[in-house]
Amino acid sequence: MVMSSKIRVALIGIGNCACSLVQGIIYYSENDSKNGLWHKSIGNYRVSDIEIVEAFDIDANKIGLDLSEAIFSKPNVAKKYLDVKPLNVKVRRGFLCDELSTYLKNSFKIDDSEPCDMVSVLKDSKVDVLVNLISSGLDKTSKFYAEVAIKAGCCFINATPSLIASDPNMAKIFEKRNLVVAGDDLMSQFGGTAFHKGILDFMHSRGIRIVKSYQLDVGGGVETYNTLNEDVKFMKRTMKTRAISVELPYEFETVAGTTDYVDYMQNERTSYYWIEGEGFLGSSVKFDIYLRTSDGPNAGNILLDVIRALKVAKDEGNFGAPLDICGYGFKHPPNMVKLRDAYQNFVSKYVK
Ligand SMILES: NC(=O)c1ccc[n+]([C@@H]2O[C@H](COP(=O)([O-])OP(=O)(O)OC[C@H]3O[C@@H](n4cnc5c(N)ncnc54)[C@H](O)[C@@H]3O)[C@@H](O)[C@H]2O)c1
Image 1 (spheres, rainbow, N blue to C red):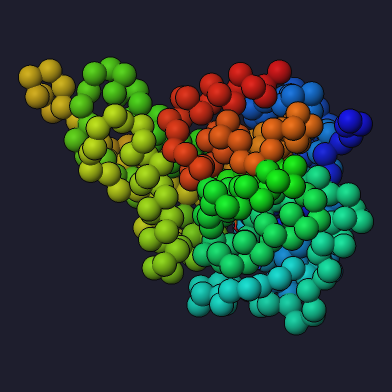
Image 2: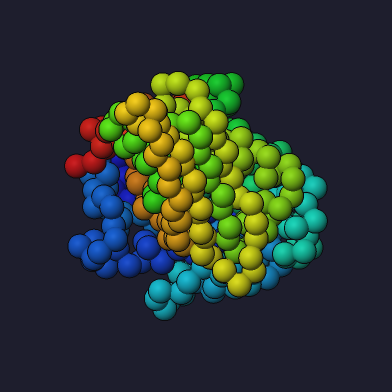
């Protein structure tokens, strides 16, 4: 089989994650020895092998703009770290198969043009990987985009909490078409969930019995505002809580989720933790701690790794929803996996 040395990527949802991802690709393609890049090579692929060739959104503010402008257009609030020259990628009109929540309706205006013929666009541009970065809660739309990927012969990354890679029927269809799918619900590199999982694992490894824990996230940006919608909040909270519970071999009380939106926090997030455990003789171990991070950049390394890993998996004929990729990059993979195991599985297979 002839393997292309470039990975041709299309982004759906030109929001804050896309903004940081595009800047990261430019920044580390110039020089991948700069600080902040987690893994230089995934398989034989460097960051400079990733090319964004198509972009889709539904926001009237972004359609028709070059991607270099769209990533810095309102309501995006992710930080601008560098000047981005024109990329010659126009944002095209995508699809919407769900009713938007009041929070999303308040955040942007839907473009009134017709959706483009996405399958033909993806085929014509020879897209290898389609990345779904749309707002959460749009389950029918995310499923529709996964089906578009299948029709166009693209691998698919689902960063949203909609069930795609963890739906066995969907994973099977990708497998039958010799394609790879990864998801669901991206897990930030050093975000609230990964940090919570890591602390619990450390306490357990030091013999502390965990009794209770919580993680309450507060942030800005449209996606956090969207989480004020009770359905989205419940879904995200369920996924985060399940992702955390897997770290311990016994049941304990835990709650994790976004609790509020603060406009001026922009793309920043604060995660507040409270953890109670028991040590020797039942002695009490308790702490409160908070973590401050930026949402967009926190998605960057994981997306760069997963995009490249999908291409490696496809090159090697490892089709469907590989757990070594899904467990590493997502909060809700097809099977729940501990943070440490997921990392080791991923590194042993993909990191050169
Ligand atoms: N670190 C992180 O930021 C992080 C972590 C975990 C999961 N995620 C998930 O990644 C996704 C993107 O997050 P974000 O912070 O970039 O969100 P965002 O709100 O900044 O951007 C979402 C973008 O999707 C667009 N969009 C909405 N509906 C669409 C549709 N039907 N078709 C095409 N485009 C559409 C919006 O116009 C917007 O540009 C969310 O689902 C979020 O839950 C992000």
